[in-house]
Length: 401
Ligand SMILES: Cc1ncc(COP(=O)(O)O)c(C=O)c1O
Image: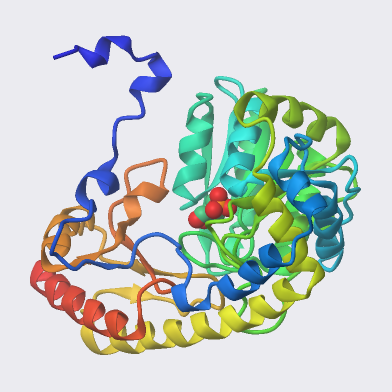
């Protein structure tokens, strides 16, 4: 047997398969109800629309799709993305300020590569999106954790931390934030807090990386203006994605930033993927042009609102009284809190053995916190939501005794 370990780079050695990969592997013949990732409701996927787009493509369209394209993205898609973002008050020049990425995950990786050095102070929510933490960790920063409540990041705490950082002669470099229906807790940052974060960024001169995959999935009125729509000095970088609103499999994400920043990120993307997939970009541009994106968002939001309600009702009847949660106003997740001494990491294995998987909350923190659980309601069917929550509720009651 090859002694694999000795060949890994220092960074490569950190990529050992995590808890989720090892536990949640599909097992033949065993049905697993997955309350795990933020996958799309399968019957709602725009399959017919995408099929029609390809059936109607001209030879010239096919040539464009099957050839290498520019690293920043297909011009027709960049134009559509610029128009789409303008609807949310974000101004972005399609020729210089947008890059199409392989999902917003690639945008996160690009930001980690281009902006983070070892030891840089990077501000994140506690909790926050685990795969952003993981991507940032590649560059070895120091995380500054700021608590999140139902109104988003606690801005008073942020201000206090920034003052302490300054007092020791240091500076924070970047804030990573998911203001609208944050992953994992689905909190929605108030407008007042959004404005204060931008003011703090000006005063303390740090850049902001805003991640907005879930803002469109809003159950009560339109999505509040993103920070990028209020940015006056080009310090906000903004990423979003098709994954939650149209299709995750198309892998269409994008990042917008000032042209200096995008220039560097384009060079970095050249090393990773040269350019995005042409078929997917063409289909994405057409979905925008034909109004399919505009129709798809309210359609899928309605499905998710119903699934959220079904999950909430099932939890109300089946979950132990010691479990606490808030009703998500948008997004795809329910975030459940347990008493401090309870560890959901220790429930996962038994839960999977009984046929239900969830994501342990510990993965969303930079420090050891174990008493949370994230539940996804977008993927499982309505029946599976009820069955799975009943099964999980019984197990949690046993464990909490
Ligand atoms: C907050 C956040 N950002 C980024 C992503 C990456 O999504 P994608 O690469 O599919 O666009 C996700 C996926 O769940 C997410 O929750």
